[in-house]
Image (tube, rainbow, N blue to C red; front, side):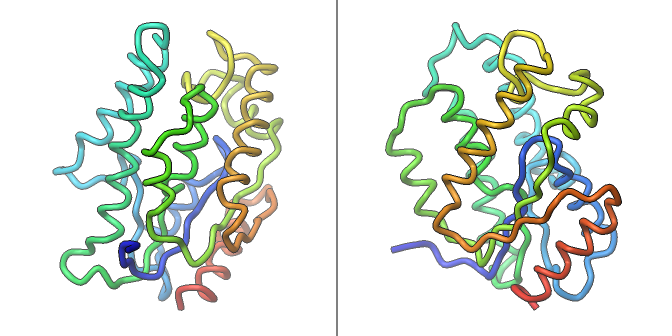
Length: 217
Protein backbone atom coordinates (compact mmCIF):
# COMPACT_ATOMS: atom_id res chain seq x y z
CA UNK A 1 0.00 0.00 0.00
CA UNK A 2 1.47 3.44 -0.93
CA UNK A 3 2.54 5.65 1.93
CA UNK A 4 0.09 8.41 2.81
CA UNK A 5 1.45 11.90 2.38
CA UNK A 6 0.20 15.46 2.53
CA UNK A 7 -0.46 17.42 -0.63
CA UNK A 8 2.87 18.42 -2.13
CA UNK A 9 4.49 19.75 -5.27
CA UNK A 10 8.00 19.05 -6.53
CA UNK A 11 10.35 21.75 -7.80
CA UNK A 12 12.58 20.18 -10.43
CA UNK A 13 15.02 21.23 -13.13
CA UNK A 14 18.50 20.68 -14.57
CA UNK A 15 21.62 21.72 -12.70
CA UNK A 16 21.80 25.51 -12.18
CA UNK A 17 18.18 25.96 -13.22
CA UNK A 18 17.58 28.23 -10.22
CA UNK A 19 15.83 25.84 -7.83
CA UNK A 20 17.96 26.78 -4.83
CA UNK A 21 17.33 30.48 -5.40
CA UNK A 22 13.60 29.85 -5.78
CA UNK A 23 13.49 27.76 -2.60
CA UNK A 24 15.36 30.50 -0.73
CA UNK A 25 12.87 33.11 -1.98
CA UNK A 26 9.95 30.93 -0.85
CA UNK A 27 11.51 30.51 2.57
CA UNK A 28 12.04 34.25 2.95
CA UNK A 29 8.46 35.01 1.95
CA UNK A 30 6.46 31.76 1.97
CA UNK A 31 3.05 33.32 1.34
CA UNK A 32 -0.24 31.73 2.36
CA UNK A 33 0.08 28.58 0.23
CA UNK A 34 3.55 27.34 1.17
CA UNK A 35 3.51 25.53 4.48
CA UNK A 36 6.71 23.50 4.42
CA UNK A 37 9.88 23.45 2.32
CA UNK A 38 11.64 20.09 2.11
CA UNK A 39 15.18 19.94 0.76
CA UNK A 40 18.46 18.12 1.29
CA UNK A 41 20.45 21.33 0.73
CA UNK A 42 22.49 22.49 3.72
CA UNK A 43 20.49 25.69 4.10
CA UNK A 44 17.31 23.70 4.74
CA UNK A 45 18.73 20.94 6.95
CA UNK A 46 17.99 21.00 10.66
CA UNK A 47 21.11 20.67 12.85
CA UNK A 48 20.19 17.10 13.71
CA UNK A 49 20.14 16.24 9.99
CA UNK A 50 23.50 17.80 9.08
CA UNK A 51 24.78 14.30 8.32
CA UNK A 52 22.83 14.37 5.06
CA UNK A 53 24.83 17.34 3.80
CA UNK A 54 28.12 15.77 4.80
CA UNK A 55 27.26 12.51 3.06
CA UNK A 56 26.30 14.28 -0.16
CA UNK A 57 29.60 16.15 -0.25
CA UNK A 58 31.57 12.98 0.46
CA UNK A 59 29.74 11.12 -2.31
CA UNK A 60 30.77 13.77 -4.82
CA UNK A 61 34.35 14.01 -3.55
CA UNK A 62 35.21 10.39 -2.79
CA UNK A 63 32.79 8.21 -4.76
CA UNK A 64 31.85 10.04 -7.97
CA UNK A 65 35.38 11.38 -8.41
CA UNK A 66 36.90 7.90 -7.92
CA UNK A 67 34.28 5.84 -9.70
CA UNK A 68 36.77 3.11 -10.61
CA UNK A 69 37.11 2.26 -6.89
CA UNK A 70 33.38 1.91 -6.19
CA UNK A 71 30.59 -0.06 -7.79
CA UNK A 72 27.69 1.86 -9.41
CA UNK A 73 25.36 0.17 -6.90
CA UNK A 74 27.38 1.56 -3.99
CA UNK A 75 27.11 5.02 -5.50
CA UNK A 76 23.31 4.66 -5.69
CA UNK A 77 23.15 3.34 -2.13
CA UNK A 78 24.94 6.45 -0.87
CA UNK A 79 22.59 8.76 -2.75
CA UNK A 80 19.65 6.89 -1.27
CA UNK A 81 20.36 8.54 2.10
CA UNK A 82 19.26 11.87 0.61
CA UNK A 83 16.24 10.27 -1.09
CA UNK A 84 15.04 8.75 2.17
CA UNK A 85 15.66 11.98 4.05
CA UNK A 86 13.34 13.82 1.66
CA UNK A 87 10.68 11.13 1.96
CA UNK A 88 10.91 11.05 5.75
CA UNK A 89 10.67 14.82 6.09
CA UNK A 90 7.72 14.87 3.71
CA UNK A 91 5.88 12.33 5.86
CA UNK A 92 6.81 13.93 9.19
CA UNK A 93 5.83 17.55 9.82
CA UNK A 94 6.30 17.30 13.55
CA UNK A 95 3.33 15.14 14.32
CA UNK A 96 0.48 15.41 11.87
CA UNK A 97 2.14 14.89 8.48
CA UNK A 98 -0.68 16.95 7.01
CA UNK A 99 0.75 20.35 6.04
CA UNK A 100 1.20 20.87 2.27
CA UNK A 101 4.82 20.95 1.15
CA UNK A 102 7.18 21.93 -1.64
CA UNK A 103 9.89 19.31 -2.15
CA UNK A 104 13.20 20.13 -3.84
CA UNK A 105 13.68 17.59 -6.68
CA UNK A 106 12.32 14.65 -4.61
CA UNK A 107 13.95 11.45 -5.89
CA UNK A 108 13.68 12.30 -9.59
CA UNK A 109 16.96 14.12 -10.05
CA UNK A 110 19.04 11.70 -7.99
CA UNK A 111 17.53 8.73 -9.83
CA UNK A 112 18.40 10.39 -13.13
CA UNK A 113 21.98 10.96 -11.99
CA UNK A 114 22.22 7.30 -10.97
CA UNK A 115 21.06 6.24 -14.41
CA UNK A 116 23.58 8.55 -16.09
CA UNK A 117 26.32 7.10 -13.86
CA UNK A 118 25.58 3.66 -15.26
CA UNK A 119 23.70 2.23 -12.31
CA UNK A 120 21.67 -0.71 -13.64
CA UNK A 121 17.93 -0.84 -13.06
CA UNK A 122 17.34 -2.50 -9.71
CA UNK A 123 14.66 -3.02 -7.03
CA UNK A 124 15.82 0.09 -5.15
CA UNK A 125 14.64 2.31 -8.00
CA UNK A 126 11.29 0.54 -8.07
CA UNK A 127 10.98 1.28 -4.37
CA UNK A 128 11.70 4.99 -4.92
CA UNK A 129 9.08 5.07 -7.66
CA UNK A 130 6.52 3.67 -5.19
CA UNK A 131 6.86 6.73 -2.94
CA UNK A 132 3.91 9.17 -2.69
CA UNK A 133 3.19 11.03 -5.91
CA UNK A 134 3.14 14.84 -5.99
CA UNK A 135 0.14 16.89 -7.00
CA UNK A 136 2.32 18.50 -9.66
CA UNK A 137 5.92 18.83 -10.77
CA UNK A 138 7.05 22.40 -11.41
CA UNK A 139 9.86 22.10 -13.94
CA UNK A 140 12.25 25.04 -14.22
CA UNK A 141 13.53 25.14 -17.76
CA UNK A 142 16.88 26.73 -18.50
CA UNK A 143 19.09 26.63 -21.55
CA UNK A 144 22.40 24.78 -21.10
CA UNK A 145 24.17 27.92 -22.30
CA UNK A 146 22.62 29.98 -19.48
CA UNK A 147 23.46 27.25 -16.99
CA UNK A 148 27.05 27.24 -18.20
CA UNK A 149 27.31 30.98 -17.60
CA UNK A 150 25.83 30.52 -14.13
CA UNK A 151 28.50 27.89 -13.43
CA UNK A 152 31.14 30.54 -14.11
CA UNK A 153 32.20 28.51 -17.14
CA UNK A 154 32.62 25.34 -15.10
CA UNK A 155 34.26 26.78 -12.00
CA UNK A 156 31.25 25.99 -9.79
CA UNK A 157 30.54 22.51 -11.16
CA UNK A 158 30.94 19.27 -9.26
CA UNK A 159 31.68 15.80 -10.64
CA UNK A 160 27.98 14.95 -10.93
CA UNK A 161 27.18 17.83 -13.28
CA UNK A 162 29.29 17.08 -16.36
CA UNK A 163 30.87 14.31 -18.38
CA UNK A 164 34.63 13.87 -18.34
CA UNK A 165 37.30 14.21 -15.71
CA UNK A 166 37.38 18.01 -15.79
CA UNK A 167 34.47 20.39 -16.42
CA UNK A 168 34.31 21.64 -19.98
CA UNK A 169 31.61 23.16 -22.13
CA UNK A 170 31.05 20.10 -24.33
CA UNK A 171 30.91 17.65 -21.41
CA UNK A 172 28.58 19.95 -19.52
CA UNK A 173 26.19 20.50 -22.42
CA UNK A 174 25.98 16.78 -23.20
CA UNK A 175 25.42 15.83 -19.57
CA UNK A 176 22.73 18.45 -19.04
CA UNK A 177 20.92 17.39 -22.20
CA UNK A 178 20.93 13.77 -21.02
CA UNK A 179 19.90 14.77 -17.48
CA UNK A 180 16.96 16.75 -18.82
CA UNK A 181 15.87 13.81 -20.99
CA UNK A 182 16.04 11.23 -18.19
CA UNK A 183 14.28 13.44 -15.62
CA UNK A 184 11.45 14.09 -18.07
CA UNK A 185 11.18 10.33 -18.61
CA UNK A 186 10.78 9.82 -14.86
CA UNK A 187 7.97 12.37 -14.60
CA UNK A 188 6.19 11.61 -17.87
CA UNK A 189 3.13 10.17 -16.07
CA UNK A 190 2.77 13.13 -13.69
CA UNK A 191 1.10 16.53 -14.08
CA UNK A 192 3.91 18.91 -15.03
CA UNK A 193 4.04 22.67 -15.39
CA UNK A 194 7.10 23.94 -17.24
CA UNK A 195 8.28 27.40 -16.26
CA UNK A 196 10.33 28.90 -19.03
CA UNK A 197 13.59 30.69 -18.36
CA UNK A 198 13.27 34.28 -17.15
CA UNK A 199 16.04 36.84 -16.90
CA UNK A 200 14.38 38.20 -13.78
CA UNK A 201 14.39 35.65 -10.90
CA UNK A 202 11.39 37.39 -9.34
CA UNK A 203 9.28 36.47 -12.38
CA UNK A 204 10.30 32.84 -11.95
CA UNK A 205 9.29 32.85 -8.28
CA UNK A 206 6.01 34.58 -9.12
CA UNK A 207 5.24 31.86 -11.68
CA UNK A 208 6.01 29.18 -9.10
CA UNK A 209 3.74 30.85 -6.54
CA UNK A 210 0.89 30.90 -9.05
CA UNK A 211 1.15 27.13 -9.54
CA UNK A 212 1.39 26.48 -5.80
CA UNK A 213 -1.66 28.63 -5.08
CA UNK A 214 -3.66 26.50 -7.50
CA UNK A 215 -2.35 23.12 -6.30
CA UNK A 216 -1.88 23.66 -2.55
CA UNK A 217 -4.11 26.62 -1.75
